[in-house]
Image (cartoon, rainbow, N blue to C red; front, side, top):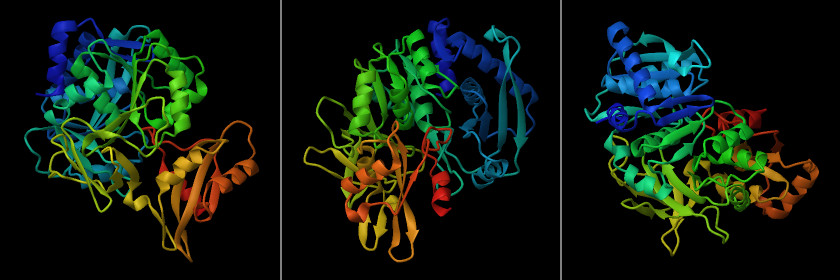
Length: 455
């Protein structure tokens, strides 16, 4: 079983139903299958010899990503969606180090902007000389790691490693056949791909935009009566800051939670007064691990809730270990991604971030995640990121990047920071930015911030 076969099954039941809306273009289940089969036929007829195994996919729109992903699966190839904006040398490094069979470059072409039935794709194929890795026969797709410490690594998944958990996560996230889910960004981000495939599994609809414009997103949500949202915390913070009219039709919001403060949650509750707000903890290697539902009472921003049904969790020496059957291929549970935390008396996970993100300042260990949460609670700060910074005397110290709110002065923010943080926690460098740099997945681009620290 794969996701192309799943699309064919739904096409037999609801060919006219909308599967995907990307800005002003609509694709029904039937139209999606027509696009996929047309590209499939071209690949079968024209692709150069050697197009097999695991294929890196570069596509310019979400629709092109999805069509290429499904077309390759229809040929029993393993698609790996590529992040946008990577330089050519990094793409080649991903191909070589992961021993992939080549690069499939897909570009959406519109003959008539008012008629999507006339859309097509331009594509090219660049084969590699790499001998493919030994992959399990059941593996049907690959996902890329963040690559924060080197060349992104490809991790492979079976159909069941995600689809086997969709009944559980869809129930908790309130995803059904009637769902219209809004998401935004590249499908190379595992969270987006998983959410989209979860909706496809349920037979629902996806609404998205290629534009970075929060008010336009809100307009799409209103026009299409979106009832569920999946966005990363940075985008949710921007949405809540820019959109003032409540989105009354939204019933469910789910997102990774470690970047959301109490104030952020309050802003979202005002924007989405009818929504169940679900904060989860997960990892690309392990899928969803824990979740919590926001209520009226204040929550510790490090509290990521209890495990999802069927997921085992323990903490040894501060390191989180997860026992789950829904992991990428090749792992042996219980497994850790080196995240740290502890379990409270209620069995809830108190998350403390990656071990390498802790700062050892002259023997005092500082948790960057807790420092970020403290800074986000400071009046006048809308967003904050904390990173370690080299220090000749103490080994490492604190660098902080903040985005101010409104017309508050930098001097007033600095004074408030000194009042909130302990002396050992006060950043040696506090840099003010107009906005945090984000990558194509909507996550903070820490490599850009690291260069600013060194300037």
